[in-house]
Length: 149
Image (cartoon, rainbow, N blue to C red):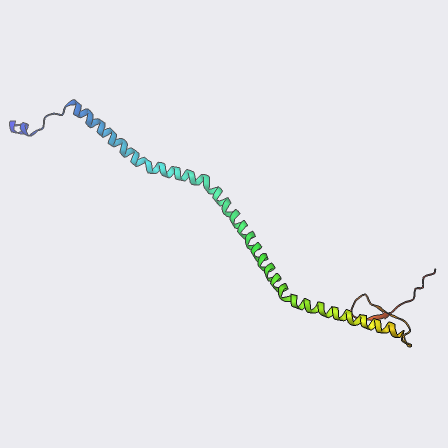
């Protein structure tokens, strides 16, 4: 090497500068290591969390489906009950009419009984009629008690 080449070279680094460079290189290496391993550590933690919480979430999902099915059934029953109540409200006028007609029938029956009692029994009536148990308006002759006294 010529003397001119020696002039172009920088002076050798001092020991202090070499120590600082070494510390800086170690810190850069450590930072690169952390940056390289942090995502894998984060993915490991995510996988760990999913492994622990997924069975619980699946169980909750099935519980929610069951509760939802029960709720839909209850809503269906409630809709049917509302429809039935509304139908009953519409039928109340019919029931009022039936009740009024029954009152009129009772009044006319009382009038007929009063008239028949006032005039006395009919001459050709042999046996009084008895109401049948079927309530279809059929009358049957009353049977005499044949039990011994």
